Image (cartoon, rainbow over all chains, first blue to last red):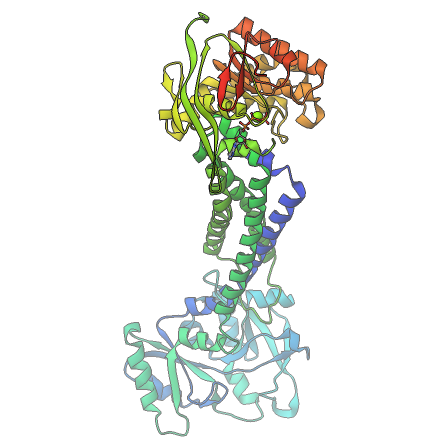
Length: 385
Length: 232
Ligand SMILES: Nc1ncnc2c1ncn2[C@@H]1O[C@H](COP(=O)(O)OP(=O)(O)OP(=O)(O)O)[C@@H](O)[C@H]1O
Ligand SMILES: [Mg+2]
């Protein structure tokens, strides 16, 4: 502890250089925090996906529909516990593409049973069952547009025009929360019966099925049995676990995880050079002082520790403030709800961040520290002669 | 405190050779020197004759090529780096020509530095620092940073730092070399007082005959050898 103030005094000597180094570290760790949250947003669905759920879609493409009559046949397949369907509605709110959110017609009761992670108060569920035009919206979405229960929301759909080309209108009857922190609460779910009756075309078609299976261990077998059931029909299916489905969906944009990791690696490599350079300069300009310290009886090991402590301190001040700022920013809310359905920084990323701060401090300081440790006193002191 | 008789520093048959590329530089060859406890020894000699080298060997800052350096009952040439560091912390204080204070620390924190290696509490350290600053007459400058002190004042801080652990041996490499006559005289008086009143054994390298006059004995170093007479 008594040496810490010595380290701190040394840091304050080149205030500009120290602050610039800390600032670069700060920026790097803000970036780390934000990119981690983005990465999490792309992978949260995969991690939270129900292990006992399959998604069954048209074999050719996700945008092709399946007959609603498949539901009954699917329920009879060996290993299937429950079936419900959803359809991609692609609702457009206020004629503004930037207001995008996911909207889907569903069967209320089977849907809520299929997705217990969506938590809806009982009386709101009752209201949904009673209201044909009723819609339940996720907490994030409701907050985004400041919607309250009782509000009426008109949507247009380029895929599913309404008979008479009118706007679809929905009455908000419920706002659901997520069971877990990463649960997506940006959805807009309305009743399939209202949708099916009102649409101008495609009656009896649905987008895809969610299937609950009896035994997650048998997921592959059950998926194969479902696909076999519809083989050689005009609507062949592709059944896969929900996690794989979400992953495939995210990968249409690219391997986000790999891209973000690559960016962060480049950033950290650069920051390592910046910090390492600062420490190398600090040790070089203090050669004589290090010699004097050793002449007083400071051991080589102590000198090594002091230099490492200095570089860890730089990293800690810069890096932790960056992590803190990222956390504040992320807690303030989702800056791009159109693209990111969830946006938060899981604690384990904070842990990784703190680990990175420490590692950066040590790696950046180790070579200058070894140099300082090996410095011969007589040689160091000759520099002023 | 000192008998004035027993030998504190014994340098025996010391050779010191430096390598400069493929060339070997023999700086000290078969050197012998005894410094009795309580002596104030001035070490003179032309530039490059090896005065600093000899001082470094006596202070355990460097190692002999051959030969032994014995301080009290301890053989410096047989110690490990770590033992040497511990020995320096306890037994020796250095005073440099250019003071070599830490610019980031004020006077009292500079003086405190060697005490960080001890087990003294913060309050005890503070007391020792105050005493050392009083001895050099600089209590009123305790909070000043080196750049705001004159050369003479900086050198006093340097001396306070050297004596704060109460070492037996003070090694001074041209302590007045960077000072004007008046400040230099004050520093010399201070060293003389430390020698006479506190019994410190002092070895001082100097170019200045005026400075060596203050010492109890002067030796001359030339061509790797010591002599009691100034060589022609
Ligand atoms: N680390 C070293 N490597 C190579 N040569 C060295 C080294 N240290 C000292 N020397 C050489 O040893 C000789 C003696 O040097 P030293 O510094 O002891 O002289 P000095 O008597 O203190 O001189 P000055 O009065 O100029 O301070 C010089 O020739 C010097 O160049
Ligand atoms: Mg010299």
